[in-house]
Length: 574
Image 1: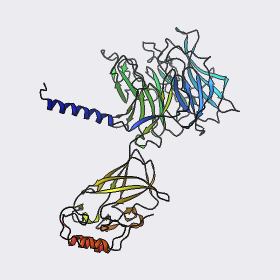
Image 2: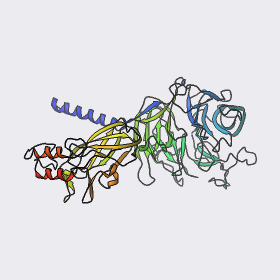
Image 3: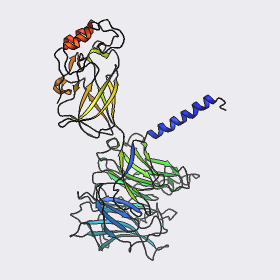
Image 4: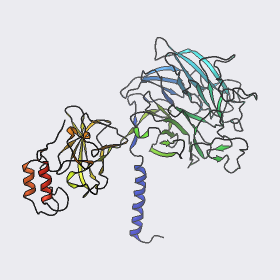
């Protein structure tokens, strides 16, 4: 029991500090509305680009409308690309237009593909999944031909949920299709004679007899004689809503929406069994039972997370591994979200070490998709029946530079240290004439490793000159032409290892280290008799002084010698 008010206050303050510290771990990322001048979308499910460098986006709505618009923050109009409302069934949140992708060789092959639920006899609930191909108008690239539909696959549904939805072409130019278990229960996801609960892989550029597609001969069950569907690429899924491909690593990432306890992220590989309905995440399903895994060779997920509140509609929303340019700290990390929790997270996985999960930000929106534009920049889709929006992921943290600097007067060559740590100010200038001042930051240079960390809050990614100022050294500029610095990653620059790191090589070599030239006491850009006089007239002064060049606490003949050695040196600038 805490019975001291002082102790209680200390504990409360500590808890507040810990909470704020945790929040700061992801507060540098935020969502910005991507297209604020567009009217809201109604039940948006995905937004894709057409792979033709036109920089257009296509937003699909559950209710069957696909809109096309320019990928510009100022865009204010959109066009109806296709409306298949009359073809589909949308009486529930998992019914309607679920998936959209363009042909891998669009526009040379002017086709796109959709995945939707429609109403027809022949299933217990009159619900079917259809995967179809449509054509784009040859005279109007912003319009599809409604009558051009070509059905590829139809699957009867046992119920109205768990329909999957994602369509995407892999690096092999084959179409991959995600189908959920249809809320069937039982072992449908384990039954390879059925398509539900599977990832399918088909070739849309040729036809097998009786089909509007062909089955690739390297599909894992192509040669089976057990009646298994040859279209199956992988199986054992509950509701694989979103997946993506990462060509640099060859990985196919997939989020499988869980039942009561766990959401999971998988790397999908040919022929593998991902465990549903015997496993949920890393756990037996139900988790009160012993898994029936004998001979199953289940493939476990890379990552899972727990349902903290089973009354909430948790749903993992798998995005893509980041390969854009605006958020460099996220490069190589999988971006994903959760529908009901509204958080955006990353997963960093090298295939060897355990994955590292980080929450980038928390929101109050329902996220239904994490897509990318043609530049591989993320697009976050907010689901709503009346106020659907598309957001961009932004970084608000500073441009940071770890910089190595040695101050000549403080440097001790024998110990390869400075006599003390001291403050310098760094200015960032535009690298193009007239070299406008953009930002500044101050940091203490460590006496042992010569390093200081500088944070610039008003600077974006770009080409800059560095200008370094210390209280009694010559102002020093960085290498001619400027340096490219990137916001969102830790940049580095070392003035100590090469004379060419400074403009005009205005730096002094002592031993094997390059140092800022000491002696410009009045900071007029030249070391001259005025600086010498400042030292001479203060000889014997103790305590802090700008004239104490070597930092030993007294202005003495050593300081005068430094000035005399450097008289005549002037700053060099662009």
